[in-house]
Length: 229
Ligand SMILES: C/C(=C\Cc1cc(O)c2ccccc2c1O)CCC[C@H](C)CCC[C@H](C)CCCC(C)C
Ligand SMILES: C[S@@+](CC[C@H](N)C(=O)[O-])C[C@H]1O[C@@H](n2cnc3c(N)ncnc32)[C@H](O)[C@@H]1O
Image (cartoon, rainbow, N blue to C red; front, side):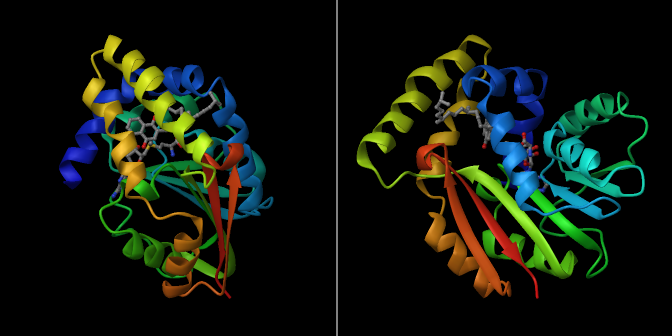
């Protein structure tokens, strides 16, 4: 399964950024900016972006931590990491290290990071509790993580719209690019993804003292914000 997920993301790498811009009507930039803000990353901090993909969140973190900070972007898709690497050449001032690794076995010591972000990663990992435990392990005491992903809205009409949009806009557009199966995967992965209150419960079980889920985009997306005490 892990290999299948990696293959999906390696295959969509060439069109990933473009499709996200089109299909979210540019909104994903706003959702990612909110996520970085909620991570509370500060100038000079050492931060980690898990499941960094093509680097959107890591590059935003790098802007926040500035020249005196350091950002690690971690992903297991070599193709998406290559895009991230290429994009970061335009930001020579910022210290970003791109690391090819599984976020379920992070190659970092305990308590290294002031802040963490994860965008559209938690729904894709094989073991959500383990992923939260790994984030807990690598955060410093007092550190925060902000985890952005799709969310199923409680409002039935909005949920119906979300399902309609995924099936009738997202999948057909991806089909035109030969990526039907890859994008058809989003809907079932969302069906089995824990809702906000369940994510909060899992975060407490992983050890986080504070956990809050913020629904955004009318509840079609959400950000789980956790703090290690
Ligand atoms: C950046 C976004 C999604 C990233 C993403 C996550 C995945 O798990 C994938 C799995 C397999 C293939 C691709 C991805 C993937 O790209 C979020 C925005 C992109 C969405 C495709 C658009 C979703 C739109 C909402 C359901 C409704 C938006 C309403 C309005 C148009 C703003
Ligand atoms: C939908 S993309 C999100 C990319 C980026 N964070 C963004 O918001 O645009 C999901 C990413 O998670 C990565 N991923 C999924 N499971 C992973 C794992 N166990 N370890 C490392 N990366 C993983 C995929 O390779 C992919 O780049």
